[in-house]
Amino acid sequence: MKFLCVECDQQMAFGERQLPGDGTLAATFKCPKCGRVVAMLTNPMETQLVSSLGVEIGGRTVPAQPFEMIDSMVTTTVGQPALSGAKGTVGPSWSADAQERLARVPNFVRGMVKKIYSDYAKERGIAEITPAVMDTARAELGLEGM
Amino acid sequence: MRTYHQLTDPDRSGLAGQITAQRRRVAERLAGVGRMVAVMSGKGGVGKSYVTAHLARALAQGGRATGVLDADLNGPTIPRLLGTVERPTADTAGVKPAVGLDGVKCISMALLLEDGAPLAFRGPTAESFVWRGAMEAAALREFMGDVVWGSLDTLLVDLPPGIQRYTELCDILGSAPPVLTVTIPTPESRDAVRRAMRAAVERGSQLLGIVENMVGGQFEGTAADELAAEFATPVLARIPWHPAPDTWATLGARL
Image (tube, rainbow over all chains, first blue to last red; front, side):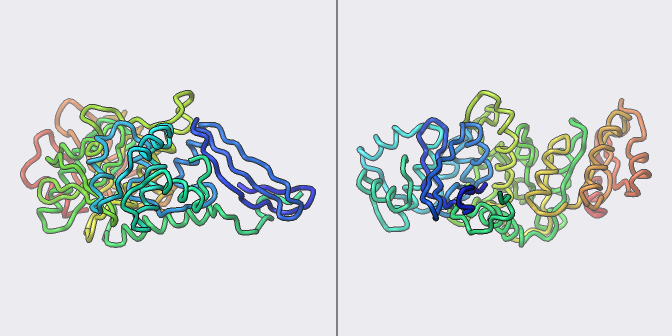
């Protein structure tokens, strides 16, 4: 999917991605010539289809993890001990405040969001994820709305 | 106004690149697999999984490293047939398959789901048919791309009835795998299996042969012989209701 600024005949550039938490997705695109910004808004079904492709609008911020989709999207698995919890490496802990904040993320995307923050912390050797770490990650990775 | 293919600026999403990376991941993961064989049938209930599991065990008993990928995501039975309930484990390198009877490695949704639970996805419940098939294909892609099989002589892919999962498999692999067809003797099975075989031929799969299962009982007919003649492929085995000790080894040797 691409966006064209018809007036300028310019391909628009990806700006940012937002996950409002209701199963929808928003992504902005900007014309590099005139600066016009448009937003692509997908409904839950469209968002789900994008998710099923295993791709991320705006590009991947972390490498794909083994069984990433199954882990985050299948609701009837035996749960964390089967896969994510047994991934061998000791992951970062979550402070109470960070857990509370994570709990506010809708189920639909919580697994994916948790994985992104966990991977961010692991890559940087951060032992505990706090709200401050989440804010920094969000800014660095362009995860507005997460 | 310019059209899609006329816009050639690199985009930050790099969706095409992400898809390419997925395919590369699958190819790299399967690089150690000597041969993949898709076990298929257009007909349900003909014993594909039964044949797959016993064939896998026979190959393993013959000294060949063998794995089974259970692509029947909604009705997985391979772990039970291979006598394992071992939950797969994972690390950063990937997911380690379970190991069943005779050392056959396997991955199956049955090993991941809660006991008795159906395969269910998060997502909008209204019109879920729109996206459910795509999610199942994604699960298959992760089975193909994330399981650390190591070095295998043969990887059998146990497909569910119909041709949809076979088509997804071809798309994920980027090529059509060789196919072993399973039928029972009846004309009803013949008609359904014919459609699947035709789909496989049209897609470019090599037909390795036909296994006629449940022979000698109440199911009457000559499905295997008719399909073999029509598609110029051999009948590799006729499996009676009570197979002899060497039935599976013979099939394994002919495959």
